[in-house]
Length: 291
Image 1 (cartoon, one colour):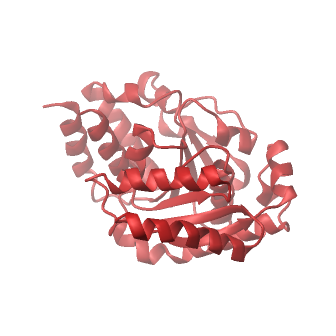
Image 2 (cartoon, rainbow, N blue to C red):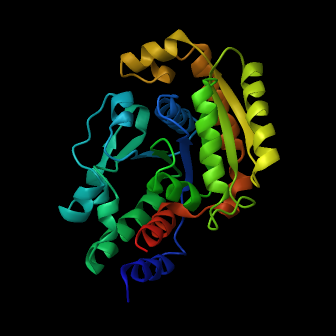
């Protein structure tokens, strides 16, 4: 029995356990504020009474820990190879959120022993139990790992800015996604967040511009979640390594992200039947990468 089959069999044994709502945040290119959006959404959802953990899946980089101003002592690899348990590798972030660093890479994790597979899967099932919401901050672009995360997810947020390169790279991501046989467009809500726009209405115009091309050429549907206006306080917060929600809660960017979190929270009942949980997402991810 190969490792992918072993992992799927273990997942089946945990299907009766509660699963967290997993929200994957991605972008066509780097530098569009994706990690800042992830962190501030997490803080706002926590404020709404949810237990939130951020998984930094931008492997090899450290964007989330820089945004939070915290340095994790351990990461996912320490759970697999160094005998650490889940609680030991979750770093405490501000205002009660948790933070889990993916480490230097995930490709190496497809070559696990049966015992390591059991350790990882049981830990991820435990994460499904202790968190209500898990926000997965992926890398940018269309790498294999990023595309596998998106295809395996049950809910995706795409961050786009008015930069022409952000628009073209976002379209490239959606085009690549639409060609995947394992991406069920009708089952996976895909929502766009317009970031660094002049106004909320400009954010809607940005969505309309991308959506026209997507509707014309791709068999995929994207919805408009909302927009975050350009705000000097947003940039200041990044430099201070302090999320804008905490540093400048009355700024227009912080208020806009608060509205996005409120809408996401209100969509929870709709998404309930689509929940896969983080353990199932990793099962799908390892299965594909291991082939």
